[in-house]
Length: 361
Image (cartoon, rainbow, N blue to C red; front, side, top):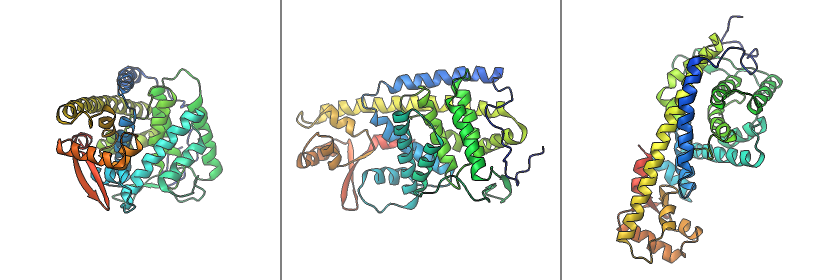
């Protein structure tokens, strides 16, 4: 049957694909991608406080994943909004923060139940979109060329059809087969995007699914591998290869793209973690040399790396000092050149300048 992009793709084939996808080129690339991912997992375990990675890297992924959907904010606006108590946050930044919340919710649910399900997909998209909508029930959803308006793809329509395809996807995710999980990751990502189960938020939900699947297969301990920056840099190719699977069954090119995304991103993330760890050590040494012993503590410096901005209340909540003493500590860190204060509304925030610069690269 000739594929017609204007007709709902209710004939989307179930998984597993019938095509031969474990080609020689794919298997060779799997080795390199798996090695890079294993090195990232091993390095993550060397960070003394895992929240240092989760908060900083998750926010960067939230920003990049939302940027793919043309939801744009700045690093400064995002990091300030994450720390400040003010409710005066622009809509784009709020949506990015909801993505972070959804990712963390998905990770928590996965650790509790061990399952990736349609119900979890629905909870994620409801957090992302801050609404109660679920599986698409009305026709009319299409994927269009943003420049010309041409219809590129019409996903399956009908709630029962969509749920059946999601049930098949769940079974494929859970299946104990001999398929390399990184190849399965590529297949799962294509299938979720092709099903397109929600009126909006499919791309971001699908990218959260990538991270959760890697954690579920114990390829990562924490959801710290994010492919969004790779996709942004190669956005045209991403959509072209997705369409190639749909229209021509070109699985190999798509899988190679995703494997390269894993390898490239894992390597870049490992380098960023090394840089964060080195900066943490340098900051510890600077604090040791410039601050009085009564102020300096390893716990305090690590707190400054959990997110670029901190404030007195966070020091208090961490049990490091009482409010008045915490304020003195942060001011001394500013005098030492480690922090820089900024007034946000009625709050005084303190920016870890070098961490901010590192994360913004």
